[in-house]
Image (cartoon, rainbow, N blue to C red; front, side):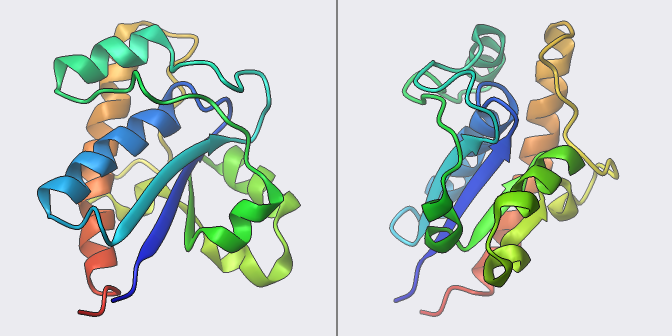
Length: 160
């Protein structure tokens, strides 16, 4: 049986990418694919290494039944490009930052999360960091939509 490894990437790894990680972990568990799909998240920047997700992100996630508390910020590493099958950026700036440091043979692994959305036609997951609580709710709406689409896309790649 094959497996697929996915890493969600934003700037600091304390708002959007941990939210996407928690939402996708939930989707994967519901689909009974936790033994087949590896999920992680990282940031392109190093400001929040080792820190828990933003409290506002944790509160919004908790209200929907997701637990971000075990997650800790980390920065993307060179090894991640070989280890993960998909590096899923939250916006164009994150995708560009990944492309800049990614070995050429792995660049096809970089995608935008919102490419997988089926209800929301936004191109990117908007950064809620400098806004109010409603921004964190919007991030979860986008992640829930796109993670459902991502799981559907990945199911076709999982060989029984």
